[in-house]
Image 1: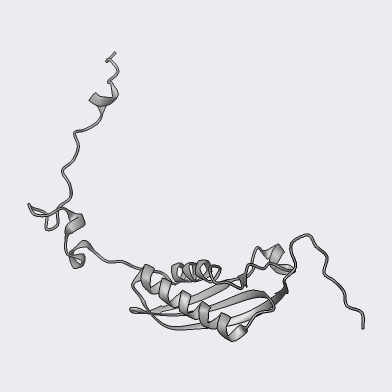
Image 2: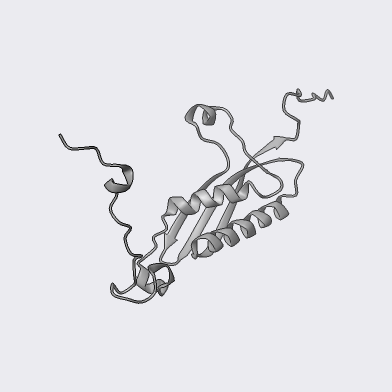
Length: 149
């Protein structure tokens, strides 16, 4: 029966860093970007970035109502289409009441376009914003006040 090896004896020696071009030269991390390979950004990734970024805009709220709660879906939602190096994004959002919709949607468009371009390198051609739901601005747990006329 062979003696058990210690951890240090069982590990192979450390490998040399990967080098662009295969022989000599700079490590792969410092190689020309065109020599490192390709980057593929999927539509779904852009959509997830858009959903995260719209929630950073003042006035946009997360909302789950009715059947959306059962289906595990809610707002915000996004759909993205990538064509070459360009992207088009459509977002559906909820907001609290009262809100100035033109300035809110402009802020959403700017934020989504800027962050998608910054994080993916894609050029955002278009950001469509649909305000699908407006919710009353009442703190959680408080009942809605009813107005009798």
